[in-house]
Each structure stands twice: as C-alpha cells, then as structure tokens.
Image 1 (tube, helix red, strand yellow):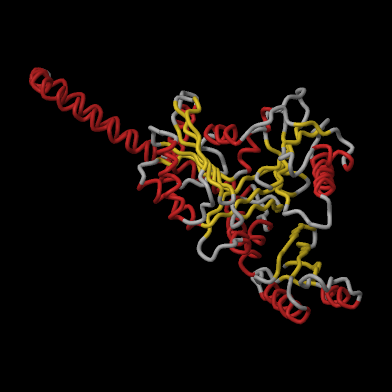
Image 2: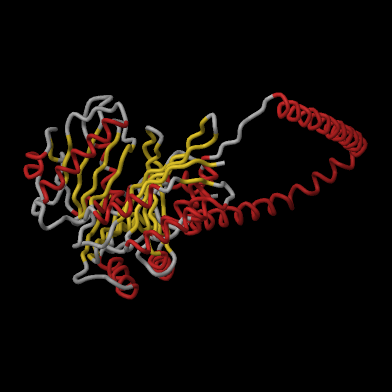
Length: 479
C-alpha cells in the first residue's frame, strides 16, 4: 500500500499541485502557499515557535495569512534536538544491520522518550559501507501529526534541512562523467554533499558547530580537503571544482579558497527563503529523509479508494438489477452446457493438484541432492557483528570490527574508545572480554589491550581540559 501511495504521489507532483510549504528552522517559522504550482502568498511569524501550542497557532495563522485553499502541507525542520550521523560499517545483511543501527540510535539520541530514525545506505568501498542516519524525537512527530489532523491538513513531507541541499546537486552544471561537490551553509549548518553527474549521492556529511579558536573559512577548507581526499580514494570520480552556497554574512567562498587547492565556484543562484520553501514542496514523498509516518501518507489514498469503491458498488448494483433477469434466462436455456463445463473444470483442477504434488516432490529431492553434493561453508561475519550489538557495554563506543576467515579459523580485530575514567574503563573492557570468551563464539583476545590503556595514562595523552578518552585495540581468534 505504501509503495502504491508513493507512486501515485510521484505522478501527482508532476502535475500542478496546491500545497502549503513551511519551514521551522531553530524556532523561526515561515510559510508560503503554492496554488497550481504558482507561489501565491508568503508569511513569516514574529518570535519563536518552541512548543506544540505555538506551532498550532503558527499553522492556523499561516493558513489565514497566505489564504491557502488546499489540504496538503510540506515541512522542512532544523532543530538542536535532531541528530545527524554518518557511520561506516562492514557490509552485512539488512537483518543484521538494523539491530546495530537501533542500538546506535539509543546511544546518540538527545531526547528522553522514544526516537524516530531514518537511514540511507551510501557509498560502499574497500570493505566499508557508509550509512547516513537521522534521529528525531518521536514526540515532535506525533504532536505535528495530531495538529495537522485537527486543522484538516494532510502531511505529505516532513524532512530535515539537508534534504534541500541534496536536491540541488542535480541542478549543478558540469561535463558528463565529472563529480559534483556542493558545500552549503543554511541556517548556520554546514553540509558537504558529493555525487555523480546524474545526481546520485556518494557522500553526505554535516559539520559540527564551529570552534571559536579556528576561523570558519579555515575550518571549512580543512573539511573540504578531507572530503575531496576521501572521494578520490574511494571512487574513480573526478571533481574538477567545488560549488559553494552559503550565507554571505557568515561565510564566503573567498574565505575558504586560500585553504583549498581546487577552485571554488559560487552557486549559480542566490535563492531567498521563498525559493527554499518552493524546493521543499517539490521533494517527492519517497525521499529517504521523509519522517512522515506511513499511515499518514496512506490516508489520502485510502480516502480516494473508499470513495471510488463506493461509487463502483453503486454502479454495480444499478447494473446488476437490470442484468439479473437476462442472466437467469440465459442460464436456464444453457444449464446442461454449464454443468458439463463445470465438471470439466473440476477434473482439470484435480489434475493440476496432482501435478503440483509431483513437482513439489521433485523439487524437494533436488534440494536434498544439492545439499549433499554441494557443501557450503556458513558465513560468520554478519551473525557475530549482530551479537556484538547485544553484548557490548554502553560505556564502550566500538569504531571498528573486522572478522577475517583463515585456514586455521577466524581472526578478530576490535577498535573502540571510552569516555570514563581509567578504573571504570579497565573494568568495563575486562567484562566485555570475559563475555566474548564465554560464548557462544568463544573469542580469545590477547592481553595487550590493558597495556595500551595504561600507556595512554602514563604518557599523558589524555587532555585535562576535556573528559577522559581512552582508545584500545584488541586482536584475537574465534573458535
């Protein structure tokens, strides 16, 4: 049902649409009404929108001041409570990946209650899989859905601010085969987006808040160089120049260029906030970052199907009354022919069931023969990584996990870090090692990890101005 709904929405977006596009960026509420693909009226609410009550008032006023006549609404949101992470994992089955992502969400979320999350699988290269993860408070989504239902609005798009930047990648000019790198600064948030000439995303990264002791142009330039180096190492895509779209009062391309050897070009347009609201309204509902619940997306389609079904039933009833007498007369004249055809169909169905039974028996015998003649060796990487996600202590952040098959068995390498003091770190890591040794995989790890932790303390490698950070590497075997 959801796939059908998304396909229908994609078809509708190609036609003229009427929609209320809203942005809520760190409490700043702006709206524009789009009627038949034409911007009608815009409105900006004074002050900040920081609670469900003020959000309800803002939407009511937006409908009034923009004279919005429809029901569809798209909303772009940016909030300090929302978390964005770009992670890397070894390639694995989706059934093994999802529990690990769920655990990561519980570790990274900033809200007290349940969290909603969306993920997108990106670049896979050199044995690692890039995952873009968005984490929102579930309570915010539930409040917004309730408000929209009370106001008679159909929520079609609820996406983070980064979706706007990603949508601009395919609009950049360039030669076929060349890559694109777009650096944007919207609402104070810096986003790096790399992709191919057809708009296919390769890498998305969000820059953390700037550091006061490092000039913003230098910090962005350093991260641009790292992104360029990563894309070049992981793919064969060449990026001849970099596009920059930012808020000139905060950062310009000229401030970044001295720190980057690749030419930086300004974005072809200088869009205002009404342009971004227009872009937000045209993003398809099938976008991976859409946080609108599936049941909300399906609601308009269900209403349409219900109305269509009711109309069809009415037509069938009208036609049925008129044709019943005709059918009954035909059946009475041809009853013998119908009975003979029914008997023939019954015989054919019985033959079909017998052939199905024979085919199933042959297929079972073939599978038995293949199981005997084609021995296979079961994989261990995915199940073991899934097991790690259930036993690793919450104080440990695992950064690397490598499982390698050899002639003598399985080799294991784990890298991680903790933010607790030394005594707790030693105790937690030791418990983790004992848990791995007890089974079900019976991992034997070398004891040099303990010396690593002690060495970090004695060499004063831990900063006294920040919370403690201990890194460790464990190697061993698995039986």
